[in-house]
Image 1: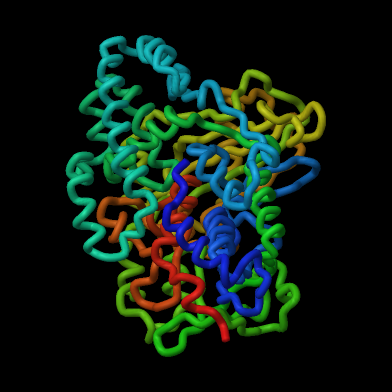
Image 2 (image 1 turned 30 degrees about the vertical axis):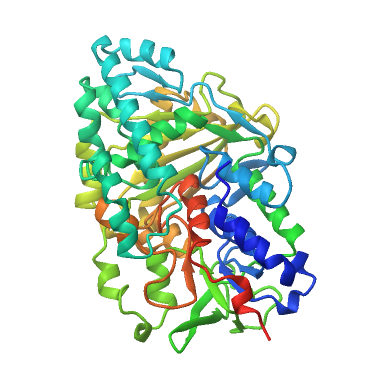
Length: 535
């Protein structure tokens, strides 16, 4: 399903020269910066296309934003927890002649998640049309017909925006011109909230059907209505959670790479991308890794590793601003980077309790009374308000093994302004966490403080310092129409030959499906391995 014809042709042409790595020294070298989903998926695809691949990861373990924290017997997924379009993951196992289901178990959520409004009313969001009609009727039965029309619009956007354009690299204006009719059919110039409001009239239902772009770093009042495709993705393929947490998927992908002979170097932060005659020719590692100041594993300090191509899964803004010397940048100049509109920041509180709260689902949204006003504070004013909305994640509702017996694992995620707010998170982080605790105790987790046994927070400052995310933005550039497709950092660098970009901050954008699609788009712009055969 959705197998790339390009990949089949590349692989067939490569087999004679590079069959099963029998001549590994002759294969062209590809270095991958970062081991998030984009980096891992790219490494698998590159290896199968005849490249000798090596990954360099700043952290001490794989995953990037999907890193896994282990603390006091509790397992915390650091980042993505919702899996949609699982066929994109299954493809990677199929490329390696394996079945994902033999290695990782996905469980479909029903309902997908619960939405709790400020007045205590609950909306259970699912992919079942009859169930959704009943939920809508609890608020206003007149919106049932509008919901059906909204889903038709979402289906159209899924076909046009995801299936037809998701793995198009948008490498030139020719790609854009070809896509203009599809953009027109989607009315992509409209905001998502305006599309929802056209069909849905109840104010709370408008919130329920428009918040989804926040999952990929966008303001529903600003991003293109093309992102209504998220509704269709969820309805078509379901919302899934991985048994063992999202980290189980990362572990599974690392296992595929081990089978391909791809090495992942941990504690190896990249200082700069080496460029000669306008072409990327390798990377230089930092003398020390940022967090623990340990020497890069298996490498000398400040070592340079040469390659034929470089694939970067790091934040694109950070990459262009700090990893590339100024004389090599014509398109992504520092000024252009600074003037970009970036996604919100994320405040995440991971906590473990020594009892279980069986009435709390796996995924829950807790929404404040202010909607547009709060989003304006976050995205436009860069002001940290006193109120907040939360995504509450309780994975032990599905998989009790993620906590000690009889305990619960949680994280509460609050969208907040990125570092343009000027918030000193080193001073304010604990106060903000306490506000979240007080709120949760008042509405869904009574006696939380009495049962709290472990706690950890991540702030936009951590995104900047630990993940090298520019301005501490959780998802890179905000997915505005003017920062999407050809206007987003290209999968093939506009500035530097031999440099390629994958991940949330490049095309097509954030979210696990988008990141995996960026790795597919890569196949359409990298040179054929045989043309780079090392002498």
